[in-house]
Amino acid sequence: MDVHDKIATSEIVPWRENSGKQGENEDEEQEEEPEELAAIKEELSHMPFEELQKLKERLGSKLYKKALHGKAKKKENGKKKFKRENKNRPMEMSAKKPVGRFREIVSVKKKINRDPRFDDLSGEYSQTIFHQTYSFLDDLKSREKNSVCSWLGTLCYLKIQEPKKLQMADFKIF
Picture 1 (cartoon, helix red, strand yellow):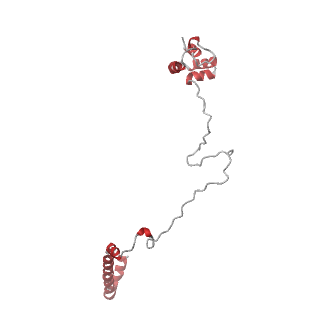
Picture 2 (picture 1 turned 60 degrees about the vertical axis):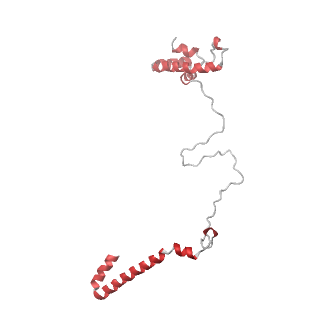
Picture 3 (picture 1 turned 135 degrees about the horizontal axis):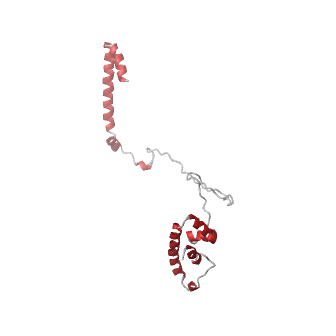
């Protein structure tokens, strides 16, 4: 039995019924179909292209496609999904669907500026805790004052004693 006979006698062709299979379960038929289709596909893959064309002309294009690809699956008639050409584009909406009377606008919460001096979330003011926390600022302030005074003293000395060195010092400072 060659490929032409297998395709013509298989259940792919709807108008030819095998009299022996009328009473069997549909589950058994579904299990046998993939094996038969696999065997047919294997034989068709080794056939020359010219013979495949003749087979297609003899059976018809619909039956030939069914033999190659199996039973055609029905398309689901559900809601049509609108797809985008590019992922960054907005989704295309149907023009036939009426727009709602009132648009839903998502409001953005207004940023509330809060002053920690007057806000209850900051807690109560305690002068002792404040002085303990920020005592390092007093030390920093005194060190900065000493460094500025020493720099100013050397600058005054250079201005009086050596004006040429002062000009050179200006370039080094800045």
